[in-house]
Length: 280
Ligand SMILES: [Fe+2]
Image (cartoon, rainbow, N blue to C red):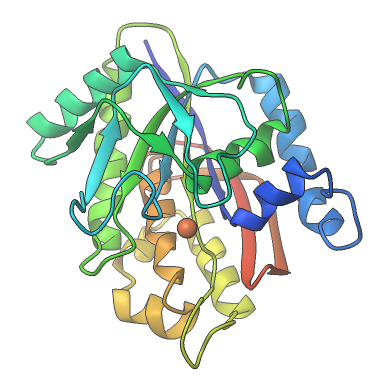
């Protein structure tokens, strides 16, 4: 049977993609950021996941103000890197796992999560930057990916509680897939950042680390953080962190932390990273 063996949380700052693509990831500015991912890159090589369910948000690349799905699942065979205004990133196409994705879509919809099914779309930095952080610059990505896009761009975005429950339902869906697959789930986005307005550049080291502590905890208090707290404490774009709760919800009650890293600043955001294993 398929099984979720680990969860990864990571920021998906677009500048990190630029650092990889332009070979700057070891310089004075980016070196300390990428060092925090070193352990994880080695661990990914050893654990060899077959599939990653990659929770991310689209930044007006595949969707725009015309269509705003709250939760969308990619059921296609492959996805190209999106052109975000300066040409597509020079990364391999992302290979999907259509059978698993359709199985998850069916299971979620029959459990009353009204997923939008996407057969064709391009994927932007929200999805490709985490792949670069974990796998570097391979000729071909070493995993298949089930993209799971969440609206965190246009209000109203889903609650943390709903995201956690979706993660729990995803775990049930994966466990009922008959093929033996080593599946990871990644939650991306965040951490504290605000890109516009008088508070542009807002970072909150203390709150971000409290959030990471809560993810490691055996209790589920983190699912009840209200939107207004994310907005107040982490800036207008910090709400992306609700996507980490889909990852955390999929791991069960207890988790073991394998790696954790936090760094300020990266571009004008705080960057955080955590690797968790189910420990029930
Ligand atoms: Fe983002």
